[in-house]
Length: 488
Image (cartoon, rainbow, N blue to C red; front, side, top):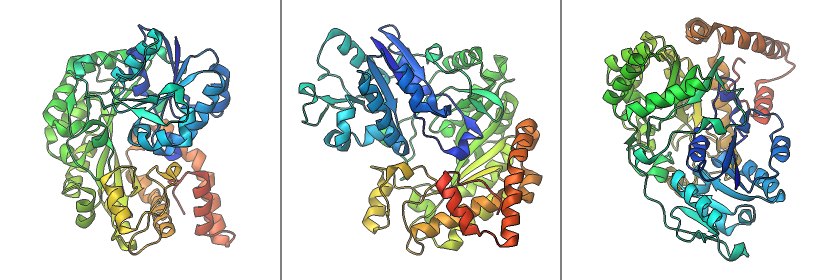
């Protein structure tokens, strides 16, 4: 059997300019079946003509796997059609197929999908391949959805869920399976992903992680993480992103990992991760050790300065820790990005701008002004639907940057426009003075300034001469999908 695993080609364009990382989950799946068959991974999210590429390479594969978040799902269906025309079976996995499996199984989409691997996929995918090779029914494979009687319009059968795996049973990712090995970077350094843990015990209402893993936190051994970092470096990485759901749930463990990186002689690599503000703020010693180990970028989940909104989002006292967390990170020359969420039920215009003021006061290097998004099956979606505030169920827009709701005081378009203005105003002269990106990545920063300066100059001139309005620029950016350009 020959298997092809495809990443989603749909990305958030603003983030893609800063970082583009290969798909770790697919490399992990490949590791669990490479002793059974030939398996290849194609990270196609950096390609301009991804459909042409898939059409060229897909012939000869027996099974094609696709992964998708909600905003990526429609394009995954288009690629599945290409795979089906080539004669391959298709298997879907990831957040959206997992959470919407029942709805997908009853829809017309099911004609393009032979199997859905729900939740944590490694063991389920391996058993599916084994069953296919042996010509056996998949009826006993936990975590799998499939067509019975060769899919004759009867909808999909959904086997019981699979218990979470023991981390000792999860194999190291198979990076040799990748067909595309260049074009992945953070700023201007080649990057790869290494996971150190899975899951999160917190109960944020907007998050799908609990629906995938339950409120569980599982740790890989530090020895395995170090071995994985070495393998990523061997495959060309100069920078490592830890995509853990909540790496700072155990701050002492993260500190031990940092010391292990130092002891292993790997502190010359550049490390990045996402973390909670409370976890970072809990220990200056931890952050100092992160700086010593080579960390130079952290995405902080701050979410909001507004206590009412924090309570709605299920985030407790997150903003209380933001100032201390940012200070600790900046003291160690670590670039800080923050997620700040607006568009919550009682938000008015002043509430949205409070997040902007917080980011400016903290001198955040890359604030991301997210818009509250009613992701499928989350507690927040149920509450917003009950309030009558969800305005759009086109999941292609569910990327955190597009408004899909209204508040009690603002329309959907007003939420979108105000958030766009926040991004447009943030990256100005004041940001140029204090951001740490220009110090840590001067070549990348200079290149981006050369690219953007003419763009900004034209917009300023058009505004001054009255040839165009801010609303014109807003429409232009909304159409292009780049909503964080800055400077109007």
